[in-house]
Image: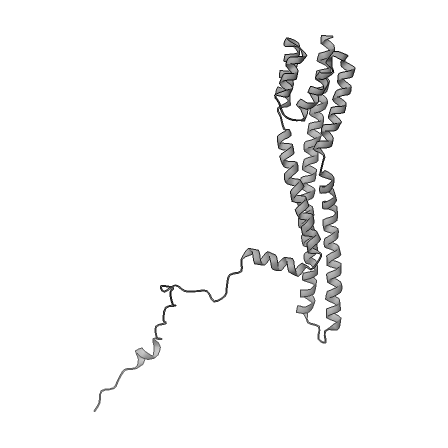
Length: 240
């Protein structure tokens, strides 16, 4: 009688899979990983044509934010130390020595004080007038570009809302033209319409924050300018 063959082991053990070519046994993923760049591009395209002016606003905002940041960083100076050096130079060596201290220091405070020192021989009133004129010039330089940041902070969300309204109109037109209205159709159209509002707010919020921050820094410069000019006028008045 022939011996029976046990086929249980061969029935439950699957055949070994061949390793992928050139992969040294590595397992490849079935679904490709989407990069963040493609996710952002897809989000931008779904927003519609109003995304382009919002993008343009963001480029302008970033440009002025970088430019104003560099300007304000360069304008910073230790005002108390500077004024101490200037006033000590005026008392010990005269106005020319104080002018040299201002020439060696960068920033709006030094430039304003230097303008006042140039008029020191004409009296305190001439010094005060020269400081006011120079202060107005420096303030206009520090505030340059802030009007664009304020404008973008206002316009960007409005462009977003306008794009949302336009997208909602298209979405409802598609719903009206469809034979069967599904929740997916409604949700998809509204979702794409709200992308422009999201983009507008993403541009407006940081722009507004930087605008207010720059204004606070400029206000601090104004206070320092006023204090410095008052100290200089009083010192020159004492020397007279």
